[in-house]
Structure formats: structure tokens, C-alpha cells
Image 1 (cartoon, rainbow, N blue to C red):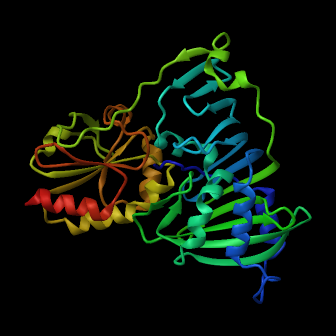
Image 2 (cartoon, helix red, strand yellow; image 1 turned 180 degrees about the vertical axis):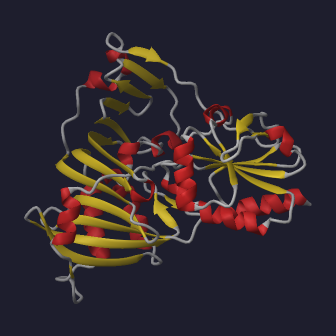
Image 3 (cartoon, rainbow, N blue to C red; image 1 turned 90 degrees about the horizontal axis):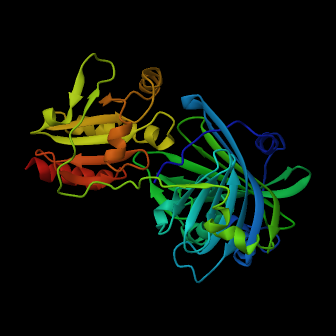
Length: 396
């Protein structure tokens, strides 16, 4: 979940895509490719590879939050059908970090601090949160069959030239959904259209870049690919095992986050209330149904869920229901900027990093719903239908 969520600076490729002009592909038939035909060709290309090596540049530009970041990196992927967890093993490097999954265990090397974190039993959600897979070649390989089959997705195709290469640009428009990093889909809690422009080189049918935008603001995410090497040779065998790095890196263990169990009492806490000299203690809210939304300022999904939470506040305005944001680590200045731009109709407490960890929150936004006795009814993503149903039941 989500937390994919970052923002970048416009790259040269993005400007080229705009300035070169896009000319719609006209006509029908084999000589005039459609979006689905080109997507099929891209899928056949990617699915036919036993391994894949490439460089990437992920650019995150959340102008609505004044957040910009660029993440260049490199990846080696080796597709292993026998791996039923994610279907491939990998070695990825960016920001002086190296991420390795050998099909059994995963580990992360901090090349600056010379430390190593080991996960001997990784679960699917662990991989779904890896930044390097955001709108990546893995995303396309896993998502394309579903994208082709889904007739509710708006699709179009155009011609363009990028870096003197003839390319197609496939435009996809999804209603209230985004494509997950490992190819699934996540529902959005707000009425928002999300568009993807996938640029594909005509000669090779290899992706050049993926641009993601929405119809609510100027935020965008751009992943550009280069130096793509199909069926690349594997790194050395020893490089796949954490024991090979034990003499250079100190093994550290990061405490695993454990979400609260349903029907158990939520731990009490007291945190300062944003915009007020007062503090809020959870125990003071007993007798009311409490929805806690854990959020951070630089989180696109946290922004997109605000209108839905505002609607929830309005719907239960005359009931014993409290909607309260819990900001994990932003400054009061950052929270003030978020409130001015996005206008939540509910209050927030802050300095909530310790509470987030105690509640097992590993992504943002995360929802924890409590009954009138302070017991956990739900913890997870914002699912409006489910949450409203639980609230109504708890009020009875």
C-alpha cells in the first residue's frame, strides 16, 4: 500500500514528448496499430525474456505539495516461473542502496553505513512497496494482460519522435484506479481520473518511459528507461546471498511492524492537536466511533483521500463519530501547508511517529477504525464502502 508516493522534476524526455508533438494514428487494419496491438507486442517482448537488465530514472513531481525528487538506479531481473510469490528474483541499486531477492530471502545493503537488513520470510506486500518497481518494466509485464482485457479503460495511440527514435505513445485513462507496482490495481477513494502515457520504441517494441498524471492537479510521476539488455547475464552466484557480504556489512534487524488485531483494544496515546495548544488523548474519545487516518504531507494518496474523508465527516456530522488525522512526522509548518492546499474538514494530531509504529502502520494513508469501547474494527487502506458499513453497524 501506498505509499508510493513521491514527486519529481521534469526530465528532458518529458519535454521532448511534449515539444515533438503527438500525431494520432489514423485508420484501422494491420498497417495501423491500435493501442491494444502495441501493448500486446510489448507484452510478448517482455514476457519472452528470461532475464532483463536496465537503467531507470524515476522522477516524482508533486507540485501541489512543492515536492520534487529524482531517483536514478539500475535493475537486474531474472524471471523464475517456479517462484509463486512474485515470479522473479532481482538485484536493484539506487541511492547507494542495494536490494536483493534471491527467491527465498531478501536483504538490503546500505553502502554508506555499511549495514545490512535481512528478511528471511518476505511476503508479497513487502515487494509491492519497493520504489524501484514504481511504473517499471515489471509493472508493464504483469499489468498489460489486464489492461488489454479491461474495456472500461480509455485507450488511444499516437506517433511521436523521442531522441531521434520513432515511437508510439499509448494513452490509458483509469477511473478512480491506479496501477500497482507489481501489476494489480488499487481503488482510489476520490473521484479522480488517472492517465498513463506509455512511450514505446517502434523498432524494438521496448518501453522508453511511463508518465502518470491525474485530472485534479499538475502532479506527475515519470519513469524513463535506458540501456535495456534482454536476457542479460546474471550477476555472480555469490552476490545473491547475504552471507557473501557479512565481512563488509553489519547485520541489523529492523523491528517488524505488526498491525493491530481486530477486536483488540487499541493502545492509548496522547498527542498535540494541530492548530491548538491542547492535546488529544485517545481514551478521551471513548463512547464514540473513532476513525484514525495516519498520513504524511508528501503522500499523493493522502491528498486524494481528503475529499472522501470530508464527505464522511459530513455524512456522520450528527452521529457519535470522530474522524481524526494522525500525522507521523511532519513539522507544523508542513502540516499547515497541507491544510491550506487540501482543506481537510477534520482535525489532526501530530508527532505521531511512535503511535504509527505501535499501531503497525507501514504505509500512508492507513485507516484504523475503533468502536465506542476503543476496540479495533478495521485496519488497512481507505475502503469507503466497507468503512461506512462498519461505522453504521458500530453506531447501532
